[in-house]
Length: 254
Image (cartoon, rainbow, N blue to C red; front, side, top):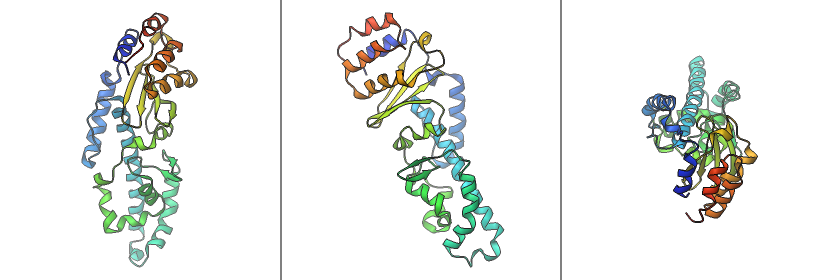
């Protein structure tokens, strides 16, 4: 993304998510909660802010499933050791399924994802085969699971649409996805290769809302990395002031 274009857009919107006091306070709170599980992270970009929220919600779901399993095991302690794993799952599954139905969740690869910092296979274990948590190779996942953590980026827009993070999903294609951050009136565009772009929109044009149909061409252009497509999309957008468009129109190369 051409830094000249960002500089021009900032003339109509100098707000940045990471500078908001409430965001700094919230990320510090979540990091303190996540640190014992090695889920904490340095916050350098908007995606880091959202990822912390996704991790926190996923941790809540993980711990709730584990608590229900332990509760069932305690209630049946007299016969628990006489039950095989299929039978243990049979007893615990109704309680866990009832709880999962109330959790933030989404589907990926045909599997239910309640814990977005785990891959679909581990999520399937928590969903269908919870009794394996007692096996030596899985027991440590109660507390120590850093070696199993995946980046929620692998799930694209899905955690956002499921409410694990707050911004409005605007667009996704094979290159990445974009969300609208209403607190600072910016499009946050995340490429699957790790690139991130914060696209400030003119405050007087956005208010508190953004039409996905209007935001999608901007996101697609940024993900394409084509400077002419980016320029043309910005100049055609209803979310950029006309006086800024005239300056952007003169930019042909990154």
